[in-house]
Image (cartoon, rainbow, N blue to C red; front, side, top):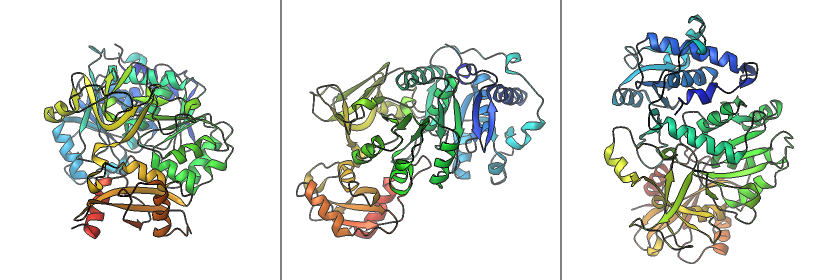
Length: 499
C-alpha cells in the first residue's frame, strides 16, 4: 500500500497547473516544493509518524501543501473548520494529543493566548522564510498496511456533537479510485471548488483531480455566488460540485441555469437530498453539463453511490447504485435484508468504510457493525437495483402516529418557483402528537403567502400529513459544510409553537 501523498502530488507534470487561487496559478512543481519545505519543518519540530497535526485555514495552496506534507512524513492530518470556536479547538487538540499545527496567519492572530502557544506551528506567512527543499530528496514514509491511519475528519455535527472519523490510507486510495472511475476524470479536468477542504466532499474534489493531474480552482467566496460563476467562466472550469443549499441558491437566485458555460461538462451533487424539481432544473440548464447525483458520508470516506447522468430522467429522486468496490444493502432492525421495495436502513460495505471514531468505542460499536456501516438513512431499492432515500431516521415526522418524510414535504414545496429553500420539522402537539412546521426561504420580492404554500401541499399530501404552519425567514441555519442544522430549527419551532 502506497502512502496517499504519492497520489496527491506524484502524478501531475511539473509545469502543469495544479491550483488556481486568487487569480494566481500554482504548478505541480511549485506545490511539491512548498510541501517539501513544510514536511522538512514538521520533522524539525519533532513530528513523528502517527502523530496528529492540525490544519486550520481556508482553502489555499498553503493548506494543500501542508496536507500533502503531513501524509508524506507519515503523520495524521486533522483538518479543522475555519469557523471552529477556540474552546472546541483546544478541546480537540488535547483530545487527540496534537503535536503540531499548520495554520494561516489570519486564524493564528485571532486565537486567544494559550491555545497553540506551546504547539509547534507552521504559519503560511512564514513559509517563504523556510529553507528550500525538494520532495525527491525527502523519503516518502512507507505505509504499513491499508488500515494505517491517514486523517481524522470531523463529522458534520448536524444531529449531534461532531466526532472524529479515522480515515486510512487504504480508504483514501479506494474511494478516490472509484470516484475517478465513474466520473471518468482525466488531466484535462478543472474543478471549481467552493466547498471547504475540511469537509470530506470538498476534500474528495482535491483528491480526485490532483491524482489524475488535473487542476483545482479555489474560491472561498460563495457568499457572492455570481462572482463564483464569473470565476468559473473565466477559468474555463470543466466541473463544479456542491451541496443542496448551494444549488438552491444557484438555481433560484443567480444566472447559473441561464449561463452557457461552454467548458462545463460535469456537475456533482452530494451532501444531502436535492429536491427532484431542482435536479431537473440542473439537468436542463443552458450549459447542458452531465449531472452526477451522489450519496455518501464522512464515515465512508466520501462517496457511497452515484446515479449515472443518463438515468436521471427515468430514476429521478434516486441516489443511484453503489460505487465500484462498494455494496449497499437495505436491512431491517435485525440487520436482515428486506424485500425489494420495502423500506429499511442503508447498510454499507466496502473499502471506503473507515476505521471508526477516534477514542470513542461506544459510538463506533453503534455505527460500525460486522464490517458494515450503519448510515442512519432509510431507503428502498427498486427492481433495477436503484436506491431511493426516504429520509434520515432522525428526520422522520410522526403526525397522528404516521411516519412522514420531511424530504417529501420539502420537495413538494420546492416545486413552487419562488421558493429557494424549505425545511420541515416536527413540533410537539397535544392533538396530533407532532405537528409539521415549515420554514421557508423565498426569492427576493416573492409574493408567496402561507396560504399559497399550504394549498399547494394539499394537492400532493394525504390528510393528516399536512403542515400546520409556515414561517418565512431570510435564511436557514447552515453548518460550515452548508448543511441545514435541523436541531436549531426544531428548537426555534418548539419555542414558538411547542408546548
